[in-house]
Image (tube, rainbow, N blue to C red; front, top):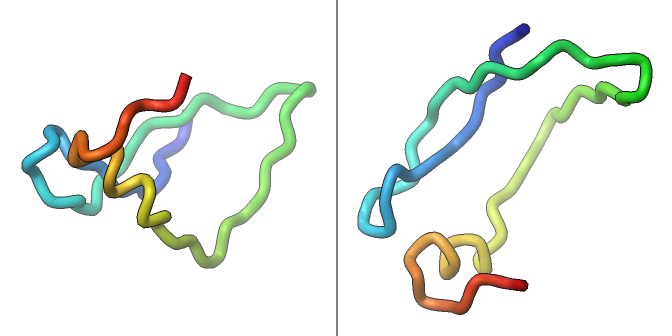
Length: 56
């Protein structure tokens, strides 16, 4: 197991906040990559705020 940096919001009215999540170790069927930069999609923010229907 290892820790990874992440952003999350505990509810639809909470702001996104930096957090750490525990990930399982990769297996022989996984590919592990290093992500240097990441953005947040505006659509994800609408889903988080319950302003758009959840995709099926």
